[in-house]
Length: 252
Image (tube, rainbow, N blue to C red; front, side, top):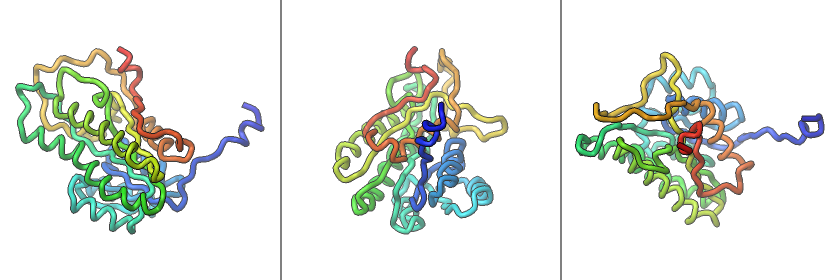
């Protein structure tokens, strides 16, 4: 790359933008907070993990934190309030996982996975969209999964919730593209977990589950970088699509 090319590379900035990140204390969420904070955004970090949020606040001065379950009407209202009724970017990043088979899954597990993975993004998006319509622009990015794009031998609630999130993404994009709103979904494969990091929220599993044939992991930082790009004006023509980030898992 020559000097002339280097000069044409623009740094992505979010100065003056309000960015909401749910599940902010998790691996992907923390990377998102870091990237948006470093680019000048006002970051609203939401999680039920108070200790994790306090650590974020100490690491990234100036971010706003909210200890709240985002998958509730009250949670959505609190997020709007702490963001001063202005949200430019919404990252629906919270998720629960279950790896049961159909005959083993408990109804309460089904209900909770659907609530967190699908109803939560719906409630928050429903509340945020009118603000974005009023401002004439906005970006919503949902964290899906390769399970948004195919079935599997286990995880019926997880798979159903992620398929539903895919449909919600496309519905929002189609309904509000002419209002200046973009909505996309990123679909990670297996996400690597740094040594010492907390386990992903796993509600229920079955001993009958057959192990995956492809276990190569993607980094939380890589997923955050993709979301960060999709939130920027560099991705202004990308709307209503699912983007896998899976180390070729879907190719098998």
